[in-house]
Image (cartoon, rainbow, N blue to C red; front, side):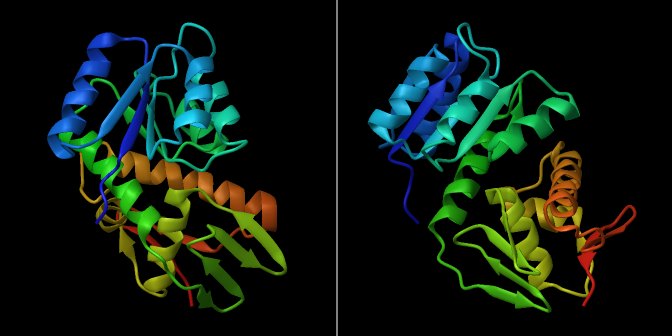
Length: 227
């Protein structure tokens, strides 16, 4: 597996920058790390340096981190992992809707952060074939779900969720299994995060394609796609 060659940290707290940098250097000794306090400068650095991953705070001194996500997504699909103290579901969903790939709360565990980064990069490297299930076609590489002549663009995590459910169609997939597929490990916040991602994905499927019952909930256990 290739390791990330470059990382960009957009964060105005120097202690956080140092902590993240140290965690990355321990996991990937040859990584090249850049950082900036400015959201605007961060956007320019993404264009100039084309990093393999971005760690982004939402509370920046010049522009809001949400705006940074929005601007970067106009020209790049680089994995963006939000690292913030903002813990409301509204903030998490908004960041994901704008194009963030993951959301980690401060204070954070270093191993959790590096495992989440690694999971994003691992899924980005795997070349997979289109999955056909009934009237649905899922292209994991392009991150597109096709249904009834409509194409729905997905985030990385939404693609992983649907791919996991499609491959186990007719069987319940637990929250733990989904978390392991998404992040490569299970952490205290993962069940809540899985539920938020499922909720957002359902809303997208309903709004863009009228799909209201594709993902079925088994309360307290997990989810499945009915064959």
